[in-house]
Amino acid sequence: MKSILPVLTVVVAVVLIWVVAVVPMNVHLSADQAQRNGANIIPDTSIARKELSGFVLALKNPHLIPLTYVGKRPNLPSPHQVGVEMFDTIFGKKINSKRSLVYHGWVTLAPTLLGFAIGTFLGLMLAVGIVFSRVMDKSIMPWAIVSQTIPILALAPMIIVVLGAVGVHGVLPKSVIAAYLSFFPVVVGMVKGLRSPDQMQLDLLRTYRTSNTQGFWKLRLPSSTPYLFASCKIGISASLVGTIVAELPTGAKAGFGARMLVGDQYGQPILSWAALFSAALTAAALVGIISLIERSTLRKMGIKPA
Amino acid sequence: MTRDPVIKAKELHLTFKTNDGPVHALQAVSLEINKGDFVSFIGPSGCGKTTFLRCIAGLETPTSGEISVNDLTPDEARRARAYGYVFQAAGLYPWRTIESNIRLPLEIMGFSKSEMSERVVRVLELVDLTGFEKKFPWQLSGGMQQRASIARALAFDADILLMDEPFGALDEIVRDHLNEQLLQLWAETQKTIGFVTHSIPEAVYLSTKIVVMSPRPGRISDVIESTLPKERSLDIRDSPEFIKIAQRVRDGLRAGHAYE
Image (cartoon, rainbow over all chains, first blue to last red; front, side, top):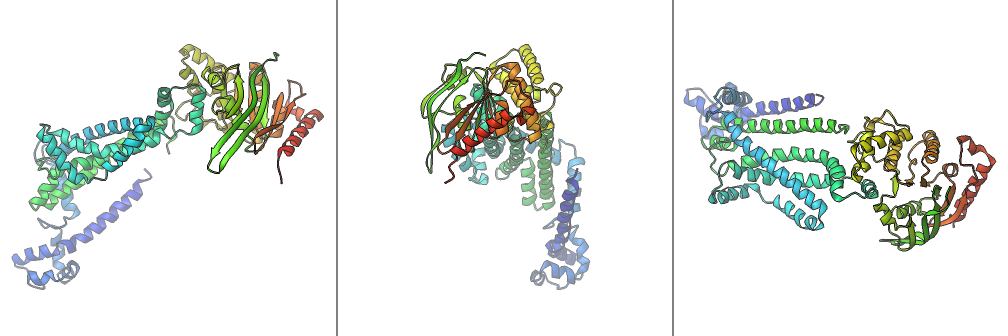
């Protein structure tokens, strides 16, 4: 709860900057529109206005300022336009409607969760392999790092096309891309976590003649739990980004990514922004859920929460 | 008390290879430790006292020389779970309760459930921690944590207890108290104890045999058989006999120290 105030302060600051920015961003559009409706604008041609910056134009025509907040196809939608659009499409539509953001949200969320599960499992297995096998340590780790340097935007369509060619459609191709992004933080975090017990701890187990398997379950795995949760938080937001990226270049008909693309292509930026913010809220909620699980797990384990 | 040596070291050498050339951690170390002895290793940092203890435990392999524990090699003895080892830090698992921490070696060694509970109760009583079973380590003071770690080392009832500066990080008042308890525990359990320290009073107070070591290269400079009675209270530290032994330890330390 202590973090509420700083977070709110930042939110208020961002919204303020946003509100101020709406005027210069949209004033040219509003001026053209107002002139067509018979209003007097200085200067009186669209070309002449292009010469002026948004701020100057707004200062010369203060009566335009309210109009910049309500344009139908603004360059930058105002916060309340985005808010109203989100409210309408989240609460105002049946959730199975093609215009409902809840529907689109689920289309994105399902592959995100599946991809996160695959990625986390894969990351865990790789981390265990890397910690217990020198060969895997030397061979897998560099490839894991290289895999993250390939732009996912270039890779995503290829994966979708290739999987499509072998008859895999629907949730799975998107999950593969989500998993591709989310396994990496888990590998890195868990390798560090599984190696976190110090020499003394390992020596102690040697004095008991502990097998590697026992050492893994009794010492290494519990020691790595805090690292696992840190990794999962990064992993699940990466998963969501991966799913949205998978929806963007591939002509997906539904999902947050498709919604953003539709908004761009049909000149309805409010739509794109509503989808963008819904995606951000979804990511925040997912990270929040993992934080809650983290807190209760660590408390149950008796580890004093940091 | 029987007088057969359980730990025998003869002409033990150990050289670590480092980037700055070889470091002679142990040179020609020969020592016999009898059953039921309380042996302290004392000396400045780098004298090899911890290294020697680790050699006994099979955690370090000597470069040359002979060493046996219960007539086995140290590694065989380790595999036979011949000793309990107490480190300088308690090293309790923060996610386990005290009780469950003590159960750790028992779980690894495959004791039955009822046997485990029985042993936990017994060793907690030995270290005077009854009533703290369900506490987590962070809820205990440093001294209590170290006692729990001693209980953990005692739980599987090995005949030998190796302790590497177990009270080094504790303040003197707690330390005195724990020393007193350790002597009681030693009397009750009849174990053979190897104890590393750099406190002269601690070494003299606890030991039947004091091994004074000196650094560069790590070697034994004096072995003192204590003449103090086996039953000792903390007051014994003011007796002339105690002071005499302490004096000899100090002389040994000084002689081994190269000041040039």
